[in-house]
Amino acid sequence: MRTILFLLVGTMGLTGLARGQASAADLARSLKHKDRAERLRAANELGKLGAGAAGAASALGAALGDEVPEVRNAAADALGKIGKPAVAVVDKALGDQARQAAAMRAAGNLGPLAVGLLPAVTKPWRSVASDTAIQQCLLAIGEPALPHLIECLKDNAINLQVCQVLSSMGPKAKAAVPALIELLGRTGPRAPEGAAAALGPIGDERAVAALLAAAEPGLTKISATPATITSNAVRSLGEIRAQPDLVVPFLLRVLASERRDFEFVRIQGQALGALEHFDVRKPAVLDALRAFLAAQPGENKGPAERLLEKLSG
Image (tube, rainbow, N blue to C red; front, top):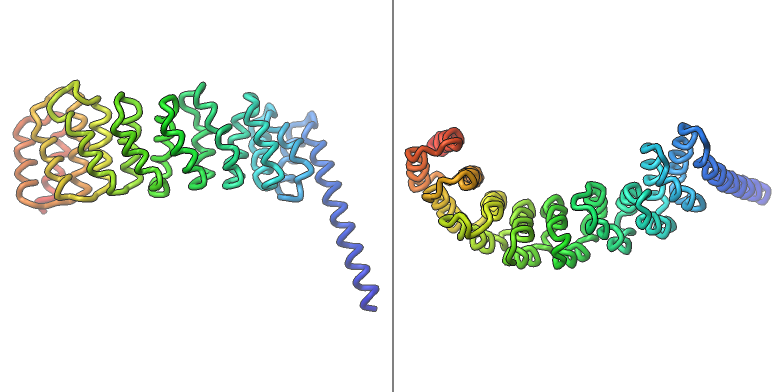
């Protein structure tokens, strides 16, 4: 009896497997159906099969170029669920401009499995200054992408875009802090401004001294440091919220600067925001805010008044 039951269960398992294989093959053919609804259904059903849809990976790769966005997205999601057998298919699609955006989504869905695809993922940055699909892909891959992104910081053609991704990664990108600090010290506006902006969301206090040094020249001379670098550095100092004994006096100096040009008014606004992050209620801070208000701060009057009221309470 046990033998008969075993054979029956085994036969059912093999039949189920055969049906799954047939289903994947049928669905793969349906990806070429003239009806868009049928193509979308096929892609979604293949996604439900997960690794069992490996035999349809090539058909799904072709569907990344479908004229219907929903079909492209469903195909990308299905490839991500297939896993390792889909890597080569996604790699090929990344080199095809017609399928590239959907392939980025598929690579992101593959997660750490897509680490070997990172050169192909970042290559389009050389022809597309800002591509949301690339950034979303890298963020989806996450920390495993950091070694490649850190290496890309050496490339002046794309390091600003890399900084934007690292900024979005936040504290997970702490491994990139030394490279960003080095980038902050380079000449030229693009690389330092990107590094100054990224270091704040990452939130590592190792960056405080470098950010102070980058912002310092902009306190007195209009052309000494591009305004964006100074502004980004001041904002990041507030986001990091570390070493107040060094940072708060610097922020007060920003408010006391004799510069009155439009760009510096914006920087002083960033300084007010940073001071609010620190929430230091010492008399020196209150006196500095009163002096700032007495100097007719223009558009920063409201924020300064609110901060003074908050810190005086």
